[in-house]
Amino acid sequence: MKKKATPFILFGLMLSIALNSCTSQKSTLDVSSEEKALFDSNDEEPVEIANDETEYEIIIIEPGFNTWLNSIARPEGYYSQSFLENRNAVMVINWNQRVLNPMRWNPNLYEMQINYDPSIDYGYEVNYKLYNYFIYFQRKYNQRLGPFIPRI
Image 1 (cartoon, one colour):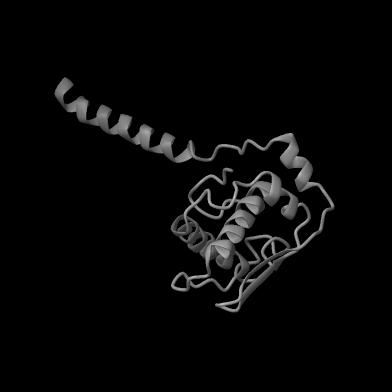
Image 2: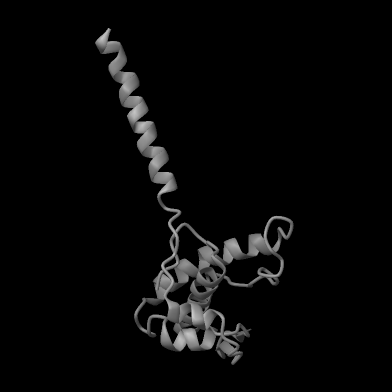
């Protein structure tokens, strides 16, 4: 009798470990009081993301983002361009899916699609600012645009 019960116990143990690992990634973000203050600020200085070579431009008018970018975000050069491009590709796909599904996702948060082609080299600055906007957005509005936790 004991030999027949062992596979069921092992299966049950493996199933509980698998389910536990799926739910453990949904931890809350650790947002500092300084960062919360920036989220609530009225600083509306726009951040322009542009690359003259690719004729690509985004203007972000999000209160507090410019100050957050200059004071809390990791400095330029911290991430490699390939890291930023890979993360941006994932987050743009999720963003655009949410724009196209306003019944499920808040249309006040996801207003416009982002035309980002991973095969185009937008340069470091464009990728850096876009990535940091996604991090800022996720932290401010408690959203998740990918499988990773938006950390700074």
